[in-house]
Length: 89
Figure (cartoon, rainbow, N blue to C red):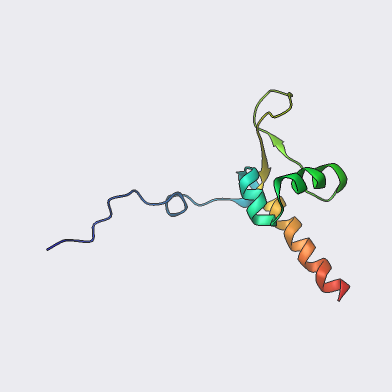
C-alpha cells in the first residue's frame, strides 16, 4: 500500500513567518500585487510620488542594479488606490 508521504520539502511560506514591513519583494511580485506591467511600474516611479520607492539590493548605482520593494509599502499603496475608488463613487 502506498503512503501519502510528502516527497518535497514544505513551501517557504509554511516554514517562515514574514513581517511585511521588513520583507523585500522583486519586480515580478510588485507586478502581480499591483496588477501593473513593468513599464507602468517604471512610469509610476517617475511620475507618482505616492508609489513605493525601491530599495537598492547592492552597492552598485548603475542602471539595472538589483532593487526590491518593501511589501508593506506596496500593499499600502494598493489599499490607498482601492480607497480612492470608494471616495470617487
